Length: 130
Length: 130
Image (cartoon, rainbow over all chains, first blue to last red):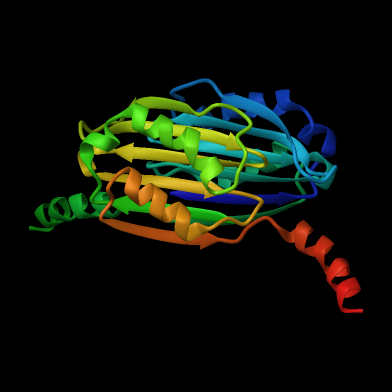
């Protein structure tokens, strides 16, 4: 399951604090039932336009990752929560919205790459129904 | 632009080498016209089933990121190439396919989070046409 969030109308001070993003990346995986396999990494970036700067951060969780890119001067962020396991997307959206006081969130859930898991699940289902 | 790749039928030895993924993450951004802002990070993970193990790798590029998760025992991988800038998706797919000898690649291109950029671009276009 791959949850994609484009968030708008956020608090520019929160978006401009690398420590806010680092704390979120550190605590967020456990809040949605995931396990970190490494500490979060957060980098400040500066784009080609003056208003394009912010923080890029990610944390690797078992078989998956969570990433953020913040744009304080634009009051927005992009987030990806990508996991082998299902998780509570509504809770994930709520936590991210709160962390940066986002007013508008556009979320997409993208099923992907799980063909082999579905193929494995079929015989088990047949056995259950037999 | 967010290119999402689910690749199947890859070479399990290549997928099982963290160094192969690290080299790809190091060289791939420049090959598609992007700039790293930090060295790549690669982690070995072990999932809940014995066949679920592999490498998760990540590199942060200006305003964007590239991530991979390999599954050597399943001959597959998941990759995300996410960038503010447009890039040559066909070239990106070809390079990833070659690196792990993938037989089948399912790719999706997801436009996202560029509302503010489109809003900025409009007046410029009006000036050009005036």
